Amino acid sequence: MLDRSQDPANDGYQLIRRAPLASRTTFDVPAVAAWLAELTRPQALPELLARPEFRDLPRLVLGGGSNVLFTRDFDGLVVALANRGIDVVESAEEVDRVRVSAGENWDGFVRWSLGAGYVGLENLVLIPGSVGAAPFQNIGAYGVEVETFIESVDAWDHDAARFVTLQREECAFAYRDSLFKQQRGRFVITSVLFRLPRSRPLCLDYAGVREELAAMGVTSPTATDAASAVERLRLRKLPNPADIGNAGSFFKNPVVPATQARSLQASHPQLPVFHLEDGSCKLSAAWLIQQCGFKGYREGDAGVSDKHALVLVNHGNATGAELMSLAERIRNAVRESFGVGLEPEPVVL
Ligand code: EPU
Image (cartoon, rainbow, N blue to C red; front, side, top):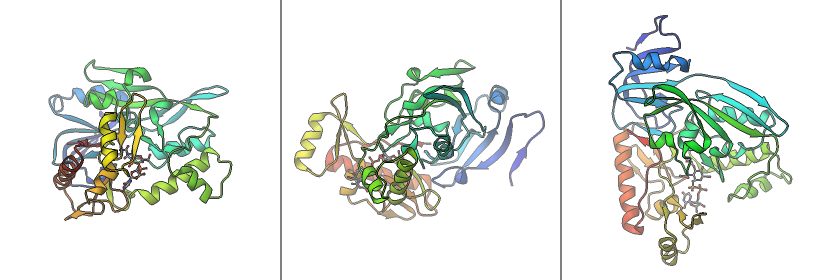
């Protein structure tokens, strides 16, 4: 039985005691939060967090739940952002500034931007999760990372006990990383200010995109065409969380020194290697995992997708602990075979 308290004094949030979390995460594994606060008005945060029952509890912010794995119950307060709104705050000839509430669905926002005639977010279509989670993870796909379009991020800063606005340069954005991820627990992202261009060259160089456009019969693609191509690629290559529990890529692509990449390529000429600006190399984790025989592998209900070796899946009743033990086996196998360490991409609790 849920114990929902919604007394009128709690303006801006709803509290749920002993809240089941499975359906709030895309991995769909069982876990219960001691408390869950659904926040519709971010301004209510200070009052919520100051409540005596929450003051000393661990806290966790949940966006769309697409990048988190619970391995056990959470004996603390989960804050779920449910604020909504997309506002064009300034319109100029070439670039508009658009403020989006953290609780908005990411894919919904991308489609809104395409419908409104903006160019830039098309390669980021169909990424599960919320707008507030996008900067946390610096989401990226098909050669584009969200940081390119972020001007600033509004957040509640626990340490300073005030609302802050962080400019893009202050967010320490890197590959699937940010200040928010590095200092997990410090910030609650409440909205994001984007700079959305009205025109911009499309980014079609990532493997597969041009081929997909050609297969669609498109010769001079628009942003919407690029989004359709990416959508077709994603639906074919990645398991859909609506069909099977998963959190997208479970591991980051490892970055290694060029010397190590060269010696690995000498013994494994097929290994995909991407050269980075700083001289280091990013290796394909999916390829390494597939070589170790894990693609489509299954231990009970915890498995590796048969569509993409980088994605762990819940076939139905896997627990977070079972998925983690499978992840550990994969890490060990890749380390033994290739001497490369893999780092999980989702937040594991
Ligand atoms: N590959 C395999 N086996 C597989 C899948 C891929 O060997 O099962 C090899 C292929 O050689 C392929 C290469 O890996 O050419 C790269 O595959 P893909 O294009 O799918 O990209 P990825 O590096 O595996 C990254 C992101 C994805 C994003 C895609 C497309 C990370 C950790 N993952 O995957 O992001 O959709 O590129 O841009 O960077 C996510 O972060 O959750 C996510 C799905």
